Image 1: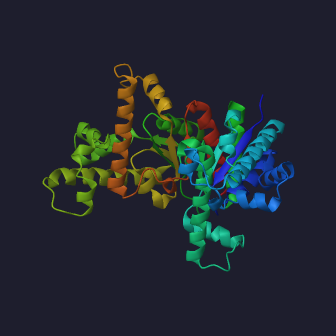
Image 2 (image 1 turned 90 degrees about the horizontal axis):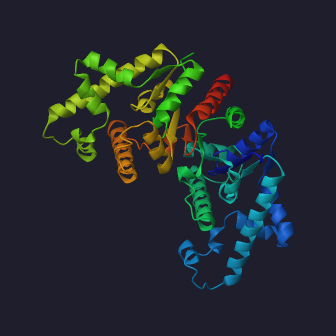
Image 3 (image 1 turned 60 degrees about the vertical axis):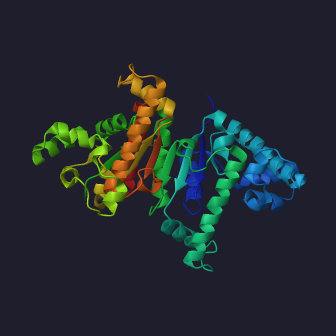
Length: 208
Length: 208
């Protein structure tokens, strides 16, 4: 029997990462996100800072989707090649993780990369007021920015994530058919929600 | 403490109705869909056939959304008035149901009508091949139609449902923020899925 894999895609500020961590704890699964980046850095011998920069989706360093998709010559093939190689290394490591044990993986297009492993794919989203409140709670730029600025930042991160996802998978991050479960965290505490989702996951694997 | 209300919106052929029935059984909740229509018919003394015709979303009998929304004079106010009164009667009955006991309600804009009761709002969807397969299983026109024709019918029903929803609620049936949980039934059996969702619902109400 293959391992149970849960992948989590999420909107910025939706609490998806916390949900992933709590699910992993409750279910006794391994949990991955930044660890993967570190592993990539070690492997590909690229500076971790640079990897972080790419993985944190500063999308401007990618070529536009239309150009990449049509395989036109690009003005700076080396940047493109480095980005592709980071993605490839990341995909390889995700596969190792998936083979090693039950795990929860947040982000990193894991739902797409690990599709052959039939992961349980969760998409976590939230209304804007909840996202703003969560960002402030975590103190992520929260105090320095006005609500409007924070909303703008949240939209920008989500847009960049969607571009990243489309660039590498050719799919729409917001297409509900890319997920098995969509979870709206608006106004909710993540802890009790994680307990409920864990109950679903357990029941699901028992009845399979 | 108020009753636990679960509302289910669904794509045609996604198994949403079966999921609703099974959830109600597993949780010991009341289950409603057609019963509501019958109750409306009795109350408003309109022929049940006519009610069915309206509720089954033969949307042509409604005025276009743009016209209705702008309150222009319409060529046939009586049809409009009858449709509105059916919706109002339906809303009233849904409220009675919600006050009476824990319940699962499939369709009928219940998520919107009962929003003050804080229902747990589930949206059930599926990819097209699964929807076609489910329609054939249930024998709903399945044998008489080609796959292409059946797909066309499924799309038409979903479109009409979305129009109905927008007409009465002013909201987008496909907006994920209208739901607490999105459930993808592609390629799945509904029975084990219902067990898993019931586990989530139970855990959710325990931790509240």
